[in-house]
Length: 313
Image 1: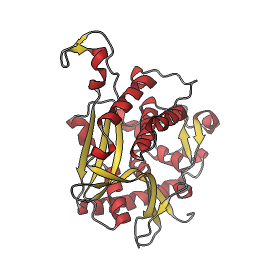
Image 2: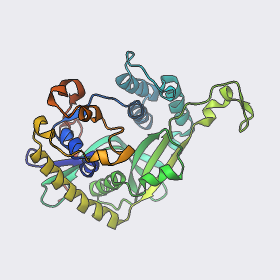
Image 3: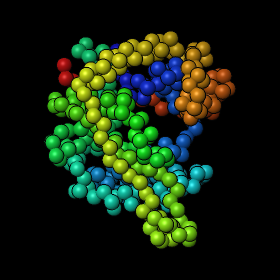
């Protein structure tokens, strides 16, 4: 794959956001700072993969939790404590039996790659949470698990209406199956601190400690994509892929990344605030800090076990 431009949804999001972030990722680095919110989401993803694969979901969850939260790691936010997250996960499983879902699961956690154009010079890769068949129409669609600390209300739901990530999943699933893929599911799980006091809950007329599991919040959402959305996404993705290649050529090592623009600084809370590379950038992107603040973890999905290549040309 040396002569191929390989991209994924993260690449397509990073390129227009920040050259420095894109260049560091292209060199195979990730930030040493870990996010409790992201790691809790990853732990829940592991549990959900076990649940929908009809394996032992608690073993899957605990194994995933131990990977992201070793005993030596301190957790600062109460809502991310093990017992709280476990209660949310087990309540989800109890309230959403697999056989009662409006879909049947085809596969879970599948890595898929395919050319983005007929020349085959650009390949697009996804790690899809699930591919499912909607029972009512028989449509084969992607499903993406999303965890959030925010309310799953209209403001949060609007984030995905034009999401390039979901559009990319829909396009890839359609090209993989050869059938029209009309929408994507988002399986939303709210991660909040469940109440546990002896105060009375006026909604349930019980102590909060007795009704705490009723304060979980889940939603299965659908986001439609028309065929013109998919073609516009593919066209724009090709443009961004060539910009990505130019960044790789212009910033081939950490010394050159020192001079890369940091557009993220102009984007307020949506930019550098939660970026994994923020500490490295604050110290001037000096390569002498790389060992302490960067982890070399190159992205090579085509080398993963069980990867699926779909050459639709």
